Image (cartoon, rainbow, N blue to C red; front, side):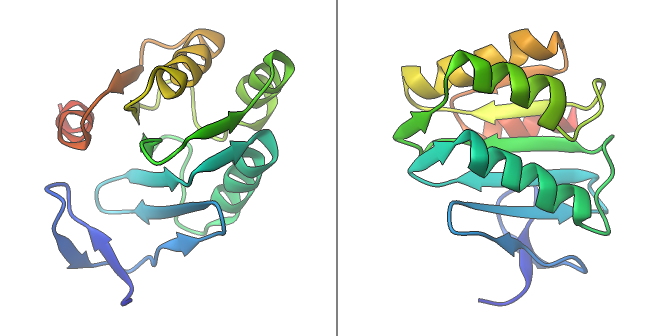
Length: 141
């Protein structure tokens, strides 16, 4: 695969910043669009989310004020306890409290996890969607 990024419409375009691939997540920092896109795999744990946050902080193009689209649609197994949600929201999350964040979900488990994060972060700048297109439209609005 080439070092391409997805455009806001879902098509491919060349990017200066390549995607980051990990065993359980993939992310891309779009500097021009000031947007981070992350897609998690079938199994998600607090350690994997912390690993994503760490790699993102280390990325030379990342800024905490960027918007984020979190795609959870492939996730089937969310191994998160109440204490994990609190730790992730309070100590691990690399984004500024004013950054726009969109979660894309399909199942009630995914929706619950996204809502927990939204509540614990106390942010109105987090929204939950059932389609990537709706999330992209909201981020651009």
